[in-house]
Image (tube, rainbow, N blue to C red):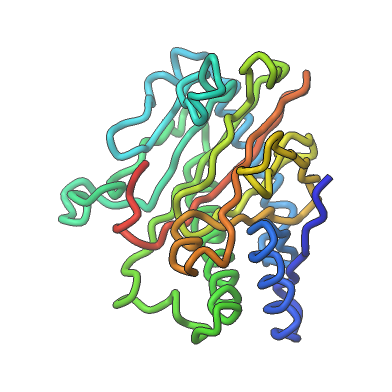
Length: 281
């Protein structure tokens, strides 16, 4: 198991948080965030609603198939994160939700911006409202983490809040369901293939099923993979390639993957890019 630092957003000792976060970013770019302000009861509701969607018949889910704006449903094996080592795509299905931009808004012409695809209320009542609220609240947590990251980089705490610096945020919320197909790395079968994230940072909420692994040094052979334990009520946060590059590679964007046992696994990553310059989904 990987030993990760834990950042408490309720801690008034900001220098302690900055020190812990800087150490984590130099080591692996992975850390936990607790006391983030999203209630356990609401997180349970998000996971409950996620399970309700993935329990729908496949033909219902396919009506919401992912569009060119990366909104909607991605079926099993659709994503192929590590084509060098995978013989099939990822053994997971997903659903992507972004910032809601009306189709007639000029902003909708930009990459990754536009209207979302939503299940109808008669099929999943309350589903849209839950996901829109979670999207908003996760963005506020990401802003709080970004302020500590800015201080850890010896920048002004509001650096990532400046509209003239990064523009309007782009945040992609993904619901993921791993169906329980047992991973066999030696045979090229993975829940999610090895990859790094391309944006600024990712907040990961997960259930209590272990599966996430990180490799702190991708150049070492054989690669050493460590599991990241789920922690109830905590986000697992990792840095993306954008922040690694902006920090002149001092902060780490670490490759990670998911290995699945016979248990189903649900997770909710929210990737925050903050900039239309980083639009490569």
